[in-house]
Length: 224
Image (cartoon, rainbow, N blue to C red; front, side):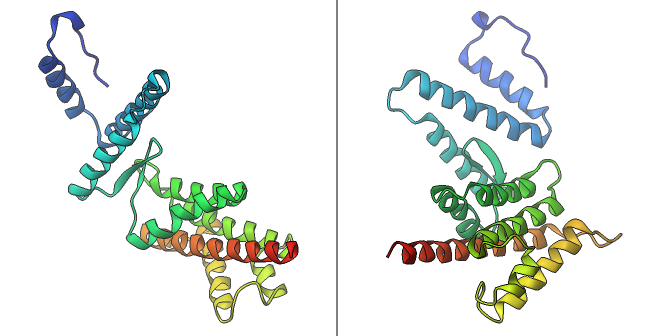
């Protein structure tokens, strides 16, 4: 990235704005997102230093996300990181699921969903296969906890008929097979698309949310 070669004392505020715009105009698109993330980091530091009640990060995040939405940019700033913005169902399921899992102390499963989102958000090219694998790993991880069984997801579905309602169990078994074929055992010329990966992540997040409720119900019954 270009450097500003002048004494800061000889420039006005408008001069700084012109120079900053010039430098940003020379950046690749992914560099712009890194600049946004670094600004968020610096603002967070300022909030912690000054502790004056001003939430600079929240204000900056809101303005950046409004700008992204206005111009149809499929990204959003979340907790200081520029991540992909999916369809409404994706946003309504995947991100709240992470928060719910973390709140319940299910950090490993939450991390797998988060890694799936990071895969979709990787710049300049998304990690499609990684997103698919992490999403299904989340389902397998929580299924193991619910059943207290260390088998693979395919084995768990077969050994525990009540884990998922029928015939959804058959669909999840096939989704697991799809993830294995398109995440672990790729065939030449059969790369999964971004849209397919987003679908898998969305479904996996919904299934994980279902399993969490199942686990909560079991814990409540045990306390009674």
